[in-house]
Amino acid sequence: MSLIAHLRSLSLQPVESTNGLILPFRTRLPQSLRRVPFTDPCLMLILQGEKQLHPAAHPPQQLPAGRMLLIPAGCELTFTNQPDEHCQYLAWVISLPADDLLPLGRGPVSRELQNFHSDPLLLTLMQQWLQLQPQLSDPQQLLQARRREITQRLIELGYSAELRSGLQQQLSRRVQTVVSEDLSHDWQIAEVCQRLAVSESTLRRKLSDEQRSFRDLLSQLRLTQGLNLLQTTSLSVQQVADACGYRSASRFSERFRERFGTSPGELRQSQDPETLIRQTTVSGLTLTV
Image: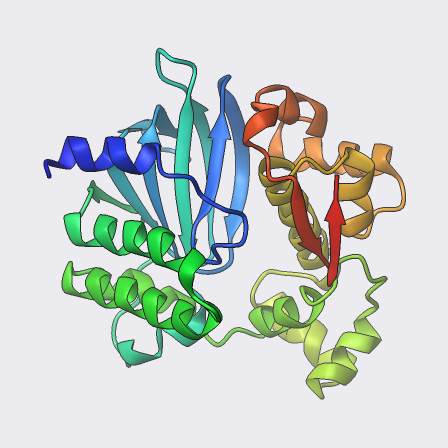
């Protein structure tokens, strides 16, 4: 199968919300977002349309359909998702948590974005998972194995330094792990310190060394979760706000616009309602809409 035919086949491949590996992002209108953070290294495949990157102090970059983008952990991207002539933009994103990166070992670390032509083996690994996953009685057993196969292929392609960004043992990552268990919870710094067995003064000092603060970190996680839910579910803005720890949808919308440069309503208007997942799990609860 030619690369073009392979990509066309993938763009038509149904992606169930429960597949566990691939998160699909679609839009039918141009969609601009700024300062979108990536906690773990992520592999992105552009299947339809074009992603336009707007790096600070650098010329814009255009990534057409068929390009892959490896995003190191800790990056923030400002970009526009530009649909094609058929009003379709589609990208698949695979997150690669630290547990899947352990075979890397020590070595140089890079936080530079890497974009490259789609690798046929990576495409095959993605397609095989979507075909096999519905037939598996316990897909979680094989999910990590498939992510590690993807990681191994990226290592073979020469991207070890970018993947190692996900192994950095920063205290902020430990804080993220704790609060991400339930972003609707009213997290207080004392509670997180107790979970991590560190003093409040130590936590504040070490986060300051990373040029972070507890409140800013919590706000970023909540707003990023809100962005993901708005893009991949049909939950109402109020439901998304509740799931992310905001009691007021208007307050959530205000902070969302400040962070990403667009409102939740504007983001939703750019999407095709038929492509949104009808069911999602939020903070341990399954919500059907």
